[in-house]
Length: 113
Length: 110
Image 1 (cartoon, chains in turn blue, orange):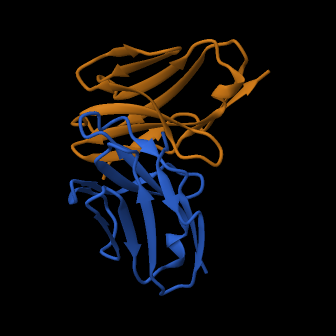
Image 2 (cartoon, each protein chain N blue to C red):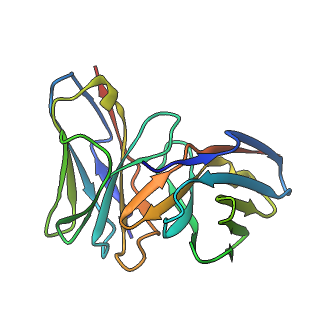
Image 3 (tube, rainbow over the protein chains, first blue to last red):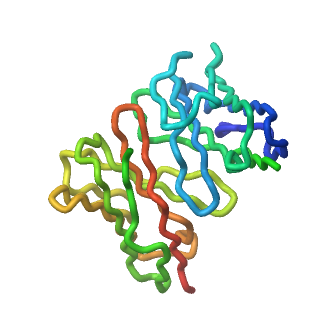
């Protein structure tokens, strides 16, 4: 069975631009979460979605937004990119009944120049 | 905000020895405490979790201990193998939010 997939793998953007990152969860998983991982640090929680609704939000500015589609895939959008947004963006899916067992994708490496 | 920290950033152990990775947390209201393993170039991988009303939980070769009095969490890995080399994160879950610590890099010496 396929794991969590994310696209693109790598991305280079310029300050002020907008970016959209995509995630496909494991089949049967209805919950998707997004994390930002800066080099040398632990993942920082951004959002959790379940059944297309936002169920949790971390301490990130409004430039960050996300949505979940009927097939449970998800997009993370970041507007007005800053240099500090350069990081590995991780997507994780989990069965709603076992939320701690998050399955992470390989991440999208975003570089803002 | 939440504060989840680790006592040691790096740990080296001999293959076959037991490993102990420690973590301090600050939020007494967290529902669960969770350990993840992250290998180079990959996303974190769930290892084991423990509910906040438990003191100990065992898995395959791993044991998690929770000391609520001193807000301390530890992960014990028995008979450490080269494949255990990775960065280990403790995380706490409060409602639908997860808070990860900085991580401990475990190196297993053959």
